[in-house]
Image (cartoon, helix red, strand yellow):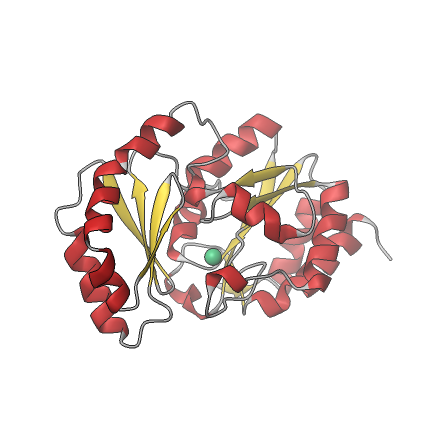
Length: 253
Ligand SMILES: [Mg+2]
């Protein structure tokens, strides 16, 4: 896998600039915003949000995140044309959304019953409507926290499945779109002939796998070796540089 800042990566980005209708899509945590101890504290650095806002004024920009749409919208500092939440389940083809949300009800009951046991291990439950996140970043002992999560998810209904992440276990509805399905639907809806997608975590891999090979796919951070993305970047600290390159490609300085 090559760096997006290598000659091959720069040439792929130049190809996007000359495409008719490219879609520029970004994950939020670990991509636009650095990972922080408390997910509630995550913010986009100002140089990134300013450049992203400028790109969104010229091109189709989407944010595709595991957070709920309402949560991420409040953190962006600009209004992209498309926002997809809940790992792909919220914001695209949502006629099934109510049924998907109800599929999580039995798990909600299980988690309510296990609430004190989970919080004693440092596990925080976040119900995002179309998915449920079990966070353990602040746990004193991560192995104990993970064991408590595994115990409570034992016998998970067939309609549900688990997506791993950085100090989080996400429970999603199996029938709901993942980020790959959501991006393909979005590209079709907005007539995008190609695009760029950057993400840093396991829930971004379906997008890297499902997007057509002429899309520019980028895994952020040190876990890129086992990724299906075509390129990598070191992390969110390189986002401002990348966005400036995209802006310069569209309007050369
Ligand atoms: Mg992420």
